[in-house]
Length: 148
Image (cartoon, rainbow, N blue to C red; front, side, top):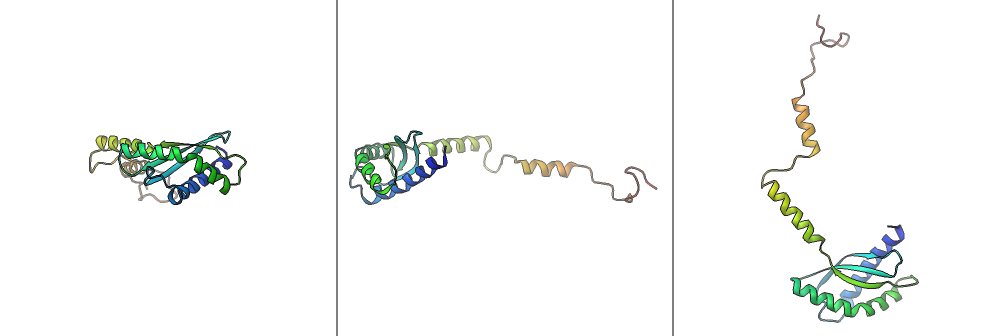
């Protein structure tokens, strides 16, 4: 992704958060958090990922309300942003948190409470502890393994 698109994604996320919080009056929207924006390469459309307070029913209602508010939000963004063309907004549920929770659950099944997955640092410390100690009795001038 280009730096321009990354900056535009972040700017859209910030501006949309403010607009939804302050100017969208649709009661269906409720409390939503914009977790990310992914603008298309041609800058014609943008997927806006959201999280809503509540369960799946509240999410569906919020998505419906945001879909209805999309033209208004797009108009407001046109006034705020300095871009030739404001992308079409497509609101989607952010499911990355469910994926992260599933991975966390799988890890706790593999490594029960109290057990931790070994990290590279732990393996290094274990190997270092098992290595034979250097013989400090020999002088610096003698070859290793040769004693006087």
